[in-house]
Length: 248
Ligand code: MG
Image (cartoon, rainbow, N blue to C red; front, side, top):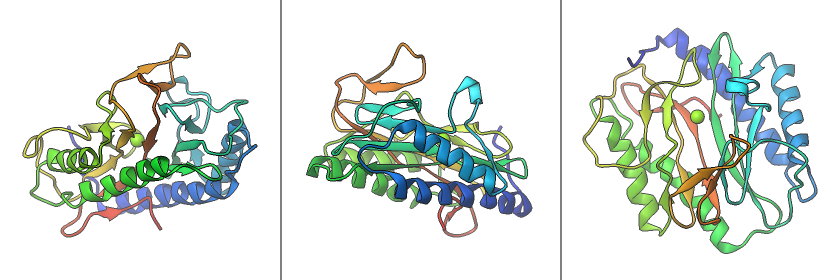
């Protein structure tokens, strides 16, 4: 069942999501060749806690970190650790904060130092596909209108959409109904209503869309070893344009 949030609940969710956005801005400033992914994770946890939030991902389903840090061919759910970021890597950061019992959730992909043109194109297309998708995030449209717009935009640029992981409703739980694929035909699924809060998160591959999970049972990588990018914001459906809660 898709929960409809009151304006009061949405304002709590805005606090959690603004803190999530601020955490991303802070992390973006720390990314440089030579930094260890564990250092980014520890910095994020300290940042979130110091501003009155709880790190939403820490311990979620047993996840050991506060940020999922996925490098190059890693798609999502990369575990922070001793890995050192190198010049030319791309790194996807997915994190969230809890404030007043409500979840924030957002993801960004960054280049480390100087990256090649194809990596830049992948990161930009992933981000832009989110904004193409939410053009359809309006009352009365169907959920899959968003999904379809993302897929069409991405595939027109020669990239592929991950099928095995999807966006989701969000509120007092990190993952609520509905599931939101980033692919598929338009005109399917529930009609969008005011007060729905959705985490839209295209995961886009440079090569083929197939993925597998590493033996650590968390890290998802592309089957073909090519790179992947991720971009996510939490949005609220309103009477007009979608309200992007995880952007300032
Ligand atoms: Mg999410």
